[in-house]
View (cartoon, rainbow, N blue to C red):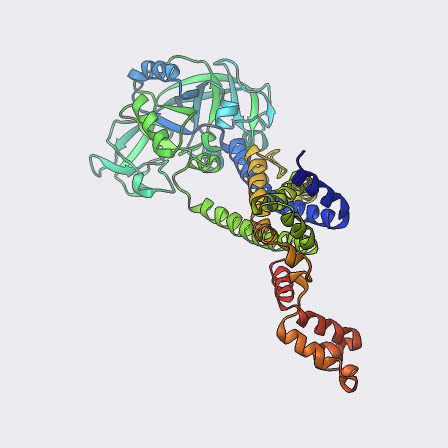
Length: 514
């Protein structure tokens, strides 16, 4: 430990009260920055977990209308190192419903089979029972239990067939907009054309020429009776569980879909930076098929090209951080300015015995770093602890306000970058705060050390007012608002403030920023 380091540590120990106050100021800066950044990451985490709970972790969906090449495309996708998960839904047909059931559920009951992890990837969760494990078991929407009296273990026989478009005396073909078009980018929507005799899939709406006026009807053909055992129900119509003709039913296994069948492939990727990269990867693996992005999830993951929503959050975080930094710079600057002013004679003596300006400046900076090493970890703990207590108390209310999503609740979420960003920002705040006091200390000399501290010298106006105020005839005469409101004490305080106008302005600015 060299002489200047020893001088710095002794100065900190000798002025414990001021050192503690400065540490508290640094800790306050770190705590406030931690609270702002942690609130942001907690909100982002809540929105992300809510999206995963309702819609799953898939990032892009591919609609495959011709499954001739699906097997080879899936094989290529599995070999792609950027693909981390693949889940596929196959169209097995549509069950015919009674008129009463149509009023409750829609025109048909679409029956799908799956390959992959539909719970994680698609957010399909059972409210009762379990997922089907073979082609003879089925998962139904819980409306079948409440309105149709179907229970777990019951066997249901359904007439399952294919939807075929029919000419109702109108146009020979009708062009439609894509059912699952991107809501955030309508210009990216694709179209498809329906012609009489065409097999319809579950992404296409029901056609009744008397209602929609398109000149197309549809019928359910090639019907076969199929019996299933009900093994579970779901109560949330997530993204994959609602089709254009009603809530779907899920089975497992089953026959390999015919070439005319419809399938949807859901992909999860890693190492992607933006939505364009996600879409390009999917289109390269499944050329010619329609691709749709999971924009909600991508947005909350921070890789969406649509930054309009997050621009607002970024702006709020930036503004709050700037206000905190400026306010804390004022606070910490005052602490170090007072410290340097009180020890100006010491710096002058050190300068007289050979200490260079650089050494004096480094001594003050070292003092700031020592304070920061203690104050920043303390502020991180206080900030995270305060957020944890606040979110524990207000989390249920925030969750309810933003919409209850299963078991997802608003709670504390701290990312490593929050700790790093808070540490760096607080350290920068401390260094900016100490820069001017350090320069003042470096300019100290033996002559200045014999004078009064520059920080306590009165201005010319202050000296004049103080002199006039001490005339016996005027000494105890209350003047001004402070004298009238607070009497002698208020008048003395006002006179003392005018003796050092710089300190008064600095204090006023500090209070305003706080």
